[in-house]
Amino acid sequence: MPKDAKPQPARVRFAPSPTGLTHLGSARTALYNYLLARQTGGVFILRIEDTDQKRYDPNAEADLTSSLRWLGLQWDEGPEAGGPHTPYYQSQRMETYRRHAEELVERGKGFYCFCTPAELDAERKAQQARKEQPHYSGKCRDIPPAEARQRVANGETHVVRFKSPKEGSITVVDQLRGEITVENRTIDDRVLLKSDGHALYHLAAMVDDHLMGITHVLRGEEWLPSLPLHVHIYEAFGWEQPKWFHLSVFLKPSGKGKMSKRETEAMKLTGQSIFIQDLKDMGYLPEGVLNWIALMGWSYDDKTEFFTLEDLVDKFDISRLNPSPAAIDFKKFDHFNGLHIRALPAEALAARLLPYFEAAGHSISLEQLLPIVPLIQTRMTTLDEGPELAGFLFQEAIDPPAEMLVGQGLDAAASAAAVGKALEILEVLPEFTAANMEEPLRAVAEELGLKAGQLFGMLRNAVTGQQVSPPLFESMELVGRETVLARLRAAVEKLA
Ligand code: GLU
Image 1 (cartoon, protein in one colour):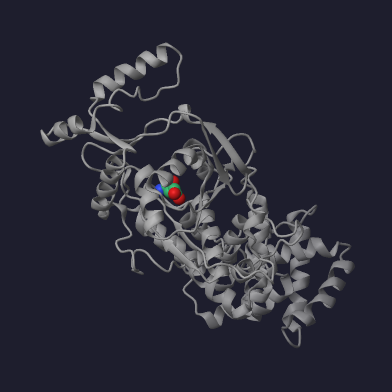
Image 2 (spheres, rainbow, N blue to C red):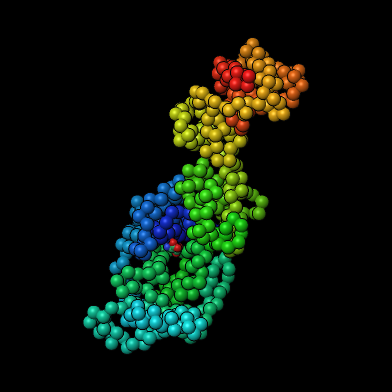
């Protein structure tokens, strides 16, 4: 935001339907809404759009609120937070929608439709046979209002449809794409209220956005085709429109095509996921997720890449949102996560790592973990790599297979001899510190005609039981002389 511009406090909402787990796309929509609210001193509303009972997933809401909280995107009004527009669940606002549907009928901008599902189905099939876009025929549009009211009063099953203008055209404005003009005859008379009295999105969301005083609607691009209808609905009520922003879609990592359910499932098999809770379990930081998704549809200056949530609140500029689709790039994600891991103070990183060590079966304290953090901080992409790298430090026993103990390009006997020689040196080292080890061990390698890497590799495998670890000498110091010597002796025996 330009420093001299005084922003109007924005009232924005994130309005997910609880139909599944929270994924990157919804998190990004929430993030941009949150940023605009925080940056302008406005209000960030969470509204649960649970009108579709068939697609309702009872686990979705808990997943949603815990995902938002984990990301640090706390809402000001909504479930749990309350607010002046309670309830924030659309399923509890049905009476409001019904009243508004009636108001449209009153104003001549809506009508009762008595067509049965069978009739509509037959109509749709006939249209398809004629290669037409399926649309409502307009059959009940012009039933005289008194007659329609009478039929409703008689208990005849009906829905309420929007009476969309059929003449001329409408020009709507999406803030990312500019003006869009469509012919009114292409806009269908959409159902607003179903025969069971349940409102559909087109009515419920417009009514709520108006009543809740929403100033900017930031939502997924899949709603762009409905924008002309939505503007007509606003105009039919005589309401002032919010500013509309339709956020770019996410493409598959290949860049070919949109993310699909099938793709999402396939991703899991390769150890990747677009679901926020999965990313948490996989050891990603909320900071890494936020940084990554912030830049999937927005940029600051095309070169700055590291942003904390605070930076984003400061630097986010809604006029720099980009409508081009963004491919999901997990390499970039790893890169951002690594940056944020390295940016954490050691104590904070230790606290974040602890649960991953516990999950890997190491019951250790923060104090035990703290000295290890500097050794692994620069080597980790995700937190779950912490125990992979340094778990051996907390293991009573390790048992590397004999093949693993053989040095590169050496046979078992030569390996045993080399490890034995190193053992002798380490036994008599006056102080068992990393700084004291390197020089004499390099001398051992030279004496045996080995490359330092060959010897150090053998020692690493014998002491840590793994091929990747924190720096060798620091690791040995942390493991301690007794254990190091015991592990090296065991290795010599196994090699013999
Ligand atoms: N419930 C809609 C969805 O999840 C919300 C769209 C909107 O933000 O208006 O797609």
